[in-house]
Each structure stands twice: as structure tokens, then as C-alpha cells.
Length: 393
Image (tube, rainbow, N blue to C red; front, top):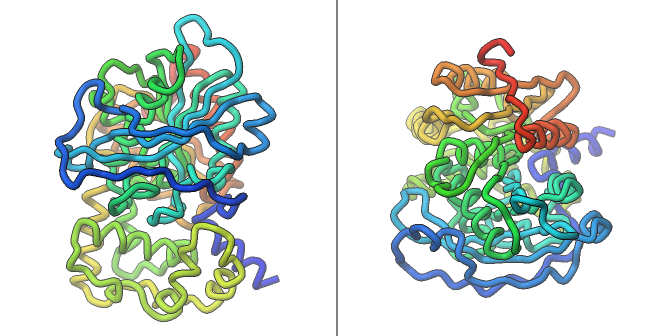
């Protein structure tokens, strides 16, 4: 029983990973340096191909799926990037005003190319967020994020890059699916929750598009408290630490992994960070050996550097006119619900319209939260005034 429990916890970060066989990677060579795209260059299609294998939910709905590589913008806003993803189109003719579009931000799958959701029919678990919108007659775009599935390093938790990827996926969808409209919504969980919240703060980048709302499920808004002095990591937080080190090293290449990762976490890192179930047994066995000390900063200077970086990528950063939903599971062992409540309080102080929902029986990236996000976004498309817990609503 203990082994089964630990195995389940070890897969918390990678819920839904390990679906059917991966699709072959697309040819997506990226120029060494190219200026950031402008206007119609954003979301321009570099390559596209019909997905050879579709998830049962997609086949049942009669929807189509196209794997794409599209143009986007680097996190610093200076250069062009090429990002892979999947565009889903519902069956039938577009409604008056064009198909509404939903851009989906996936949770953490990994930081290497084989962890791109677009390579798998079930999108490494994200298909459960896609299907409800296809059922409602919406086009759905799922980005892999910069550096996952395409050349280059993935800037883990860089909110700017993630926001541009989410927004440009909508433009890519419009380039692939005839009859799309200008209205779109965003939904994401965990890392994807951060991505869609950031997209709301970058709504000006989506010039010509109307973002009706962003639904952030178990969003990673501020992880700096995870490295407060004296904080003891939970198992999911231990498992997340190697990914945080990757994000820190993207900004600070001089940082060494041994400053944060050691013991069983270092020895079994390949299995513990795998994005498919091929190493599932090893993952569960390795998780049994983990201890909080395996993911503690080696020095105070290391701790402060991690806190500084996490603070720099934390949200909110600026006020947005886009309505926001934040769904928090009170049983979340990865992101302390208080951290999200505090972030939402800061957003409220900036003047944002936020609906904060705390679910007593839910944990991190709980599939039950998807229904809340789908219903909330459907109301935004329908023009229903958004609830605002900031104003006591």
C-alpha cells in the first residue's frame, strides 16, 4: 500500500503522462537569431501535418487535429521563436461570427523534446481539458511551449514566453482552421495556469483578438515561499525541484544542480523527471527513497538566488482588464493554497476581477477542477458578467 501511495504521489506533477505511442517529431529548424515577429508574423505556420493517431475522445466527437510549428516571441521580446502544438477543430460549419477559440496551457510534463504533449494522442493527459470545448463547438489550441518539441532550451516558468506562446497559438489556430472568430478564452493548470494568467496580463500583445477570460487551475503564481528559511518540502515539492533548477539555470547558467539536488533525487533524476510511464516503476521505487534534504539549498546564497528568481517570475505583475478564475484545491500538496490566496489578494489590490474558488476535497491539478474552468469560460463567451470575489461577489 505504501509503495502504491508513493507511486501515485510521484506522478502528481506528470498527471496523465504516458499515453499511446508518440507521434514523430516535426521538422522545425530554428534560425540562430531572428527578430521578434510583428503583426501577422505572430502565429505564422512554419509546418503542419494531420495527426496520424487521434485520442478516442477526439474521434468520438468527429473533430480533427493538426500538429503545427508556429512563430512566437522570446520571453525578453527581442527574438523570434518557433513553437510546436496541436490545433483541434470541431465537426461542422462555423457559427455566425466564427468559431470561438480556446488556448490551453498544459501542466508540467518535462523540459525536454520528448515531453511535448503534441507528440502524443492524449497530449500527456491534457486531452481531458480539450474535449469539453470541442463538444461545445470551439476550436482548441494547445501549445507545447518554447523549447519543448522544438530546438532550444525551455525557459521553465518564464511568464512572458509562456504568455506569447499561448496567445500566438490562437493566431496559429486561425491560420489553420477556416472560419475562426476573434474571440478567445484561455485555460490551464499548474504551469499552464501561470501561462494563461500571464496571457491575460499581456492582452495588448494579442492585438486584434478579444480575450474573454483566463481560467487558471491550481496555478503556479508564486513559488518563492517554497524556499523560505525553515520550510520543509512535501514529496511533490521535492519532485518539482529539478524543474525549478532548470528554470533557474536558464536565467543563471552559472548555477549548478548540486546546489539544490542531491541524494536519491540526483541518483534517480532521469526516472523521477521522466514524462512518460516507460520508467514508471523506477519512478515509484525512487520516490520511496526521497527525503526533504535531497531538495534543500546547499547554502544560504543558493537559497536566496532561487528566491530571487522565483520572485522575478511570480504573478501577478500588472493589472489586467481580462476576467480571471483561480481554482485552488485545499488538499494541494504542491502549491500551498495560502500562496495562491496571497497572490490573488495582490491581484485584487491592483484592481483585477478575479473569481477565487477553493475546493475542499481537491488536490493539485485535480481533474474535477476542469469542469469549473469550462463552465466559467462558457459564461464569459456567453457574455455573462464575471463573478468577482475581490469585490465580495
